[in-house]
Image (cartoon, rainbow, N blue to C red; front, top):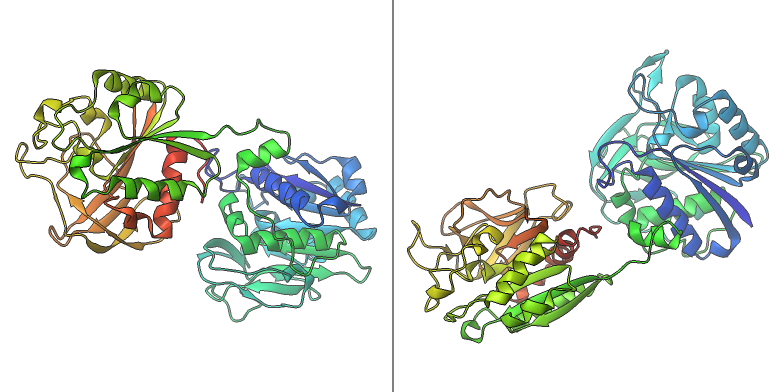
Length: 504
């Protein structure tokens, strides 16, 4: 049995939930993944948070893993945990002397000048932020994308590691111990060669002890990258003296609430319960069964989501009582009945208690005085729920319209969690424009209309009463959800509206 001690610093860099420098969440994920790995039965893992330093566990550790802030001159960041005091340095030195390993991740690779030789010997590399006693970076920080290169493919730490494209905050041109082996380089980084562009290292000391460090893993979302996650797990296991399996420690990512439950820190997850109102046989050129089925398929990749589909608006009078999210994929085209009064009351009560609503495509044209043969269905409160309305005929200046059904490029234009990290993608759909409404919106996705020549907003999110609402003008057919980015977006909408963790 090998003893691994993971010491997580306090979360820094912004509010809870943004995932950046969220060391407790990252430490929990690493513990959970190690326990679920092929070596899980051989490992005893202790995790501390808030930079707690349990001396008894340090004395027993076969590998000390540090993931937290590092001091950067007089800026308000704590020293890396294993360098934080003479007592901790002495205990880490004793740990290393008996052949145990040390792992430093991301910001915890920062080392002051006086402790740089120790840090290099322990973990192989360190960020050099101090020169001649002053804050003067020798090392560098660069945001970059691209495909990282594996520099030592025969090394155990790289077993099973497949590095797909990654956008990360890289620390590079770091100080490297002469015996350290650079493992991963990012050619997009400034630097004269692969050594200066390297971002992960391993060191095997003459006494047999091992160390691993990487300047990657800026956020919990970085660890969604399968290659980076496997690299970290391999590096920790190898530093603890384990033989890394031939395929590496390839363990699926788990969301933080799932991890918390498995570690005994939170309850079992209840499903996200969705009600979908789909239909109107008089308007089947919007193929409601097809687009609803596409949404169901996208949600199926998130095991938390369960959905129930209704085609009768009257169902909503009772259907929302046990639901978290309502999806409106419906419009009462040529149907003067609109929504029954009991359904209207249920929807308003639903948002008042915090239920989320997804306004899908042409649902923004429902219950409106401009509807063909359905003017009597007008429901003024619906304009509170739906901030941009399709005007079917000339009531307000400029009736709503759309480009011909075609392929066009959709661009994220926000860092909102619904679209953060999504690439620009091509979609086949109707591109709506001249939607009417006075309430403010902040676009999350845009596309260039061939009719108007303008970048038209396609998606926005806001709150109504206590509920979250997302309005998307996309969704004419199942083809909308063929791009992977739109499938991801569909899952994110449900989670965000339900105030649950966003999946990648």
